[in-house]
Image (cartoon, rainbow, N blue to C red; front, top):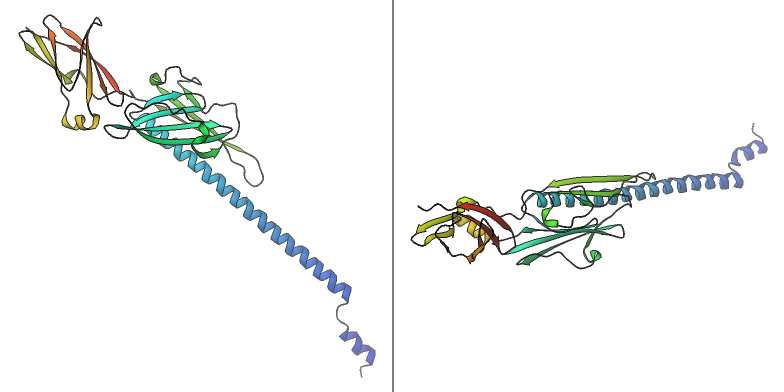
Length: 271
C-alpha cells in the first residue's frame, strides 16, 4: 500500500532551479555552437577571397609573361610601373600596364592606333587586381635592376608580388615570382633576303619584297637606306630606291606604323 507521501515524491519531477540551470546550459552550448559555425564560415569566406585574389594575380602574371615573350615593346620600365605594347592588328597595338600604388596592384589595357606610348595617368585609375603585402622587394626588375633607363633594350623582365596567404587565424605571405626572357622584341620579321637589288646602267634599284601574308600583318613599311659608312641614301614607303653605281653595301632600317623596326645589312653586287 502506497502512502500519500510516496505519491507526492514520484510526482515532484524537476525543481524550478534545476529547470533554469538546464535551460542556461543548453543556451550556452547552442551559442557556442553557433559562434563556432560563424567563425568557420567567416574564415572559409576570407580564405576563398584570398585564394580568388591570388589566382587572379597568377593569371595576370601568366598573361604578362606570354605577352613579353612575344613581339612586345616595353614603353615604361619602373620599379612599380611596367607598361608595354603588343601588336593587335596591322595598324593597332594593345598597350598593357601593371603598376603598384599604396600597396594595391592595378592593371589596364588599351588598344591604340599608331605608335604606342607609355600611359601617363595615375596608377590608381586602372582596375584594382589585388592588395599586396609590403616587402623590401620591388614589383618589377629589368635585367636584374629595379628600373631601366632604356626600356626598349630590356632583355629580361622579372615580376615579384607578395600576397596575403593567411589561414585559420595565422598570418602568412605568399610571394609569387615569374620572369620573361624577351625575344628580339619590336623587331620586324624581315631580313637581307627581303632587300632585292636590280642592277641597271645607273647602279641598282633596291626594293623591299615581303610575302603577301607578311605584308598584310605588318602593314605599310618605311625603309631608310644608308651606306655602310652612315651616309643617307633616302627613304621610301612601298616603293623602290635607286642607288648610284659603285655602292656595294647598304644598311636598310625598316619601320612599320607601330614603331617596330629592324636594321638589315645588304651587299649589292652589280657587275
